[in-house]
View 1 (tube, rainbow, N blue to C red):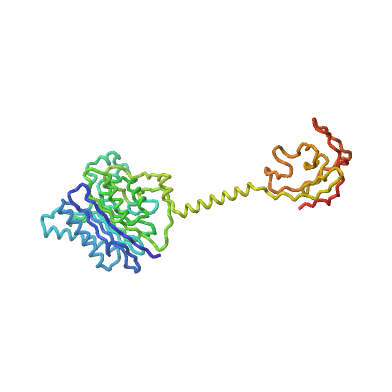
View 2 (cartoon, rainbow, N blue to C red):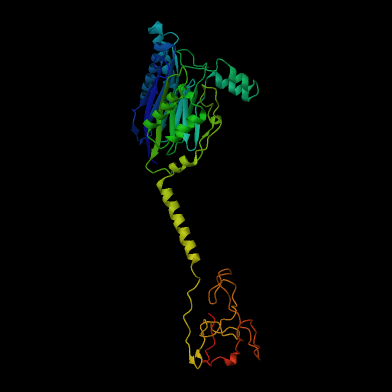
Length: 431
């Protein structure tokens, strides 16, 4: 399958006096379609530290060196990622040697390489690498902050949860690029398979101002948008949160598309930090729960094709109900009549022989006898309360001597032999 990688990045200073975050996209920001095995997209993000001047220099230096070395190396990807990371660290050490005022500078770094086989990455520090695959938001890389370590200690019952949350130095880093030995490195050289509709997001720890469910809501809302809109939506959500002393926030958004249109899906958004490290930290609120989208927002997310299919289904149900309301069979044609001395002879529906106690309701001048059909159902109309197909029954034998049945306030019934003579009809045939 041919992949199209669309990318964009947005950043905000927040409440800080300067911007210490940096990022690089190689070959460039925009759309890339990897065709050869060595073609793809490299995204790098760094969060500087060590003061305004030192942090800005550290982030820019690390991103530039990582990109340059990775692009110029033709070794396997595991070696390329490791070589580029260590070259970035060495570049910081060299910068301090050339300018003593930069002593103490450093940065976190996360880098991801995407090609036809999938996603590979390396990271040092607490910057985030997220994968959005409907319906989950998963952190892929390890969190090298002290807060993540304390939370793991609490999960192992070595310390209490309250002790882990109350630690004043939760934001301290256990590993970073400083020009000296790197204590912790997260490298994933085996490609993680990507699918159409996936999002790969790199973000500095300023994004942690959004709780887990808030972050998931924003990503879910922009899941079908452009990378520019996704990055801007996340940065704007951080700005609207209005956290005091808001850190710099940078987001790099990469959308994975294919030549085939991915189907629209509506379900819940879930945060699963246990699959790839802890979710964003910063405000102390967990990211364990997922909120169900409202019925109105879910209805808005449904594609027009789904609405058309639902309307067609309702129309089909209406047609079926209307057909069931129609008579089961057409009324039988009127039988031939014979004019006798007392008027026309009675006519009967086909297949029903005349009975002694049921004179023709059309006979003029004769009162209608009590109906043999249930109340509310006129004679000759099909009874819909039973099965559609009814087996024919043999007519009851006529009595040898007709016995008139007295009916109050009505004239006595005429015996069958007093009825006008009619031509004997052929025996009805049962279909």
